[in-house]
Length: 147
Ligand code: ZN
Image 1: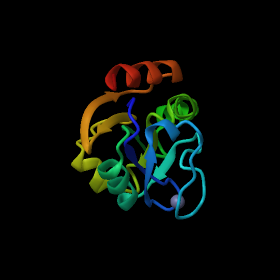
Image 2 (image 1 turned 180 degrees about the vertical axis):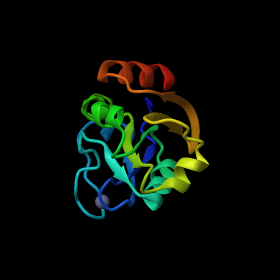
Image 3 (image 1 turned 45 degrees about the vertical axis):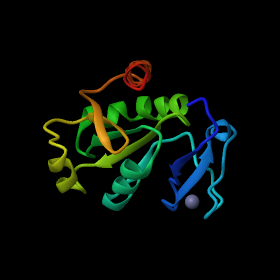
Image 4 (image 1 turned 90 degrees about the vertical axis):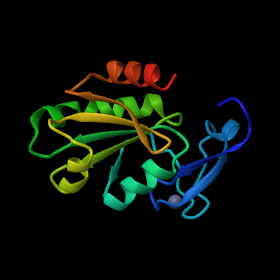
């Protein structure tokens, strides 16, 4: 990511695909459609449509936390995942998918236990991790997997 060709970055607010030059990624770009920040420094809650758009269209890796409201370890990991978002954006998009609200997506990705994090690169799963991690471990794992 050291050239100036535009990256496709999906807006976390309106899900429009924006073209952002690599060298402008770190200067807090706004969405051309809704004018809100393309990176909020926080995980994005996805529905099924948003999941497809972000995973399929993003030129940056997308890390999805498959979780559920009834899952104690998932809720316990939420602050660590939010902290990881502050550290990993804008190089990586962090998002959450509620497996109780979207069981078909969880089944398609063969989620057998939660929390499970899946890292998507160019629309494909490139790594997954089951079980809760602390923020530093999430950041380390993602940086290793995206190197
Ligand atoms: Zn937008």
